[in-house]
Image (cartoon, rainbow over all chains, first blue to last red):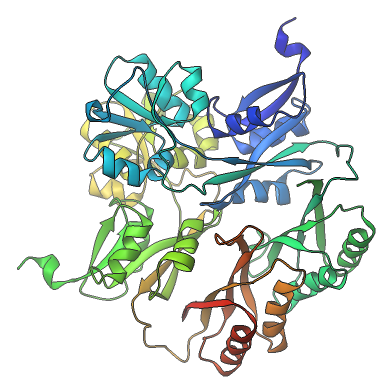
Length: 282
Length: 282
């Protein structure tokens, strides 16, 4: 029996060494868990739903890029029976990584995922102007490439990938924006035991039947009437019919709290569709 | 004097041959305009602000990826004096492109931007299982690469890039989701003359001073009271202070319409911050 057979799996969006694994390792939810990469967000969710993994970690919002609509849509329309049990926020720091110590002036090529390259534009324009850029499928792939070839090349990647491939961090935190953070959620088949002393947050999705003035007002008034604070509201066209909308709403508290339970009951009476994605510590 | 000196520039997010240029060419806003690529969304907006271009085209929302937060944040916080004058929605269709006609079974490598690869996963798993994937910085770069080497390689790119590099479309529309669309907006320094017979939409951004229950309700009630329909509501943390939020709101009608003007006036009285991004035909 191998080690991975005896450990429970946490599915995450791969490959290994990227920001999702870095966020996972910085926030491992207990002992005896084994991170396991999957190639897409849908595969992560399916792995949890089908029992191949006990938990799944997926990105849900980035401070620069906005909501990860793919995750929201999968939770809304495609995957039932999963519950958000925890959220974590992880800063996105980009490292300039090489096989051996290099001066910036020696570097002849930078390899990275196009997104990472775009997020370090100011540093690259100032310190590595005119240096060739080669794309990679992931920051981890970029770091692996420079670690295997003895050339004066540098990759943009995570600190974790530098450790994995025994690379050297030539310059740290080269990202343009210090506010680049990604919010991830852990998903499970069943709700976790709740800590009644900790502050909680609840995520719901609801749909309106008609695109009429005041429909969102109706939803929000139920929360305001009971003095429940919202931390996120986002409308998206529903995939069902043009002009119909669904709303992603996060509010403070647990779905089982008296006032929240009343609110959700009143909303369920009025709306054609309401789904509680989970209550979890903030 | 070259041709480009006598034509007015439309700045777009480059490089040439990608979806933004495809959307631009399908929706050119008049004669005598010359598309000109810029390396980032910020550069496009700056080019219009500084007068280097008369119009700028930037993505603002994708049906799979969600809002382009970078564009929204630049319009909210960094770039003043620009107005949305038009919106266009362009379908995202991915083509499998080679240098010469190929059977799928002959293809030994697929080159593409990692995003495009991810959006064609089902096709690739079914028809090109196990085929090597190489990353490119853009779909256009991928098509250029396969067009220059006489090997059985294929790129994933736009129909426009196939034409640019005289490639052959081996399989068309290989994207997983037929609902993949991107909404772009044209920005200018001044508002365009309005067509009073056409339906219009207005985009605004507003901020609240405190993270208190009912703040969004207050905003929405002003619209509902005057029977103005909203087509988008999105909250985002403001960059100014944790726990403070800004709202991106689209509503039906022109900012200058009686009821809309009243609504905006009442909101401006109550809110610390309100910015009208523009009124434009839907």
